[in-house]
Length: 91
Image (cartoon, rainbow, N blue to C red):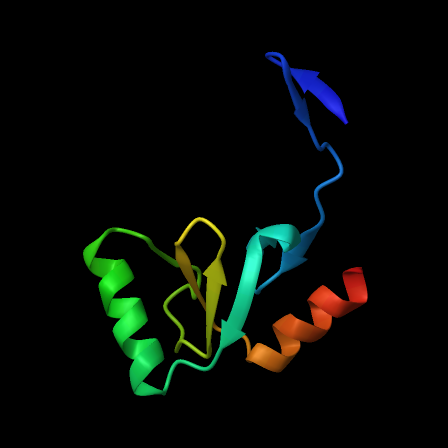
């Protein structure tokens, strides 16, 4: 922990690699889902309309939808199982 402007800041944030040299903070990931179901598609479209989608696919097909705890959604080109196992391996 460090002190930054009077706030305690965790300087040991673990990052999870989600492909193409892109990383997410492990402790901010809420869920990882497949993009094909209607409810997930609706969630992605709603987030896109609000400007809350982060596309980390480098132009590849979306294979995972990662829900982040600030209501943003990250799109990844890795399978959900791959991302989940990387999160589990970090812990």
